[in-house]
Image 1: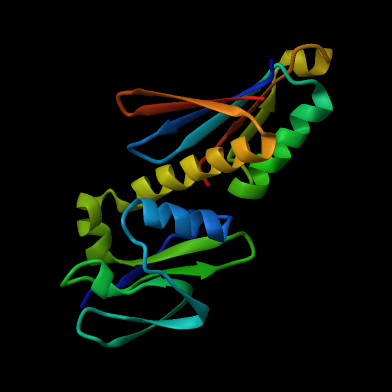
Image 2: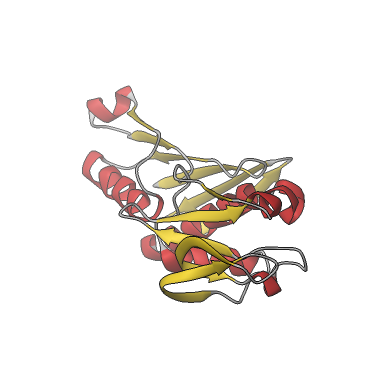
Length: 64
Length: 131
């Protein structure tokens, strides 16, 4: 089941987001939605699974 | 007199979520407009202008207006040095960022039509959306 995990540091307000179990283009859609509400992340990376086009783990880090 | 600080690296992209985040921290009275002037604690008008303003009466007796200026990237806070130091014991900006981020997660849950699970571990709040 697709899952988006957010980790918020309540002391600094910073947040990390991780997308799991989503196929490539759908993962990009989730990332696009996050960027629409949060702005451009400080860091963004795709894990090897993303390129394998099987289980996808995209990751976005940044507060905004 | 306390000078104003503008945090250009802190951006709140969505106005409605920013207003909701302010409300969650107790600041429910937010004035909206274009180029609204900011006033200091003695009623003196400052040079800074903002599109969203929490007036000092809603913050504290020695506080100055708190503003958010709209930029191409989103809203950036304009807060006096005094209020930055005293609001929520100096934690206001961090708590606003955390609250805004929580509102973002709720909005994403709504748009993805998912369910959300919360888990707090010390200063770390984990939120998981399944859809």
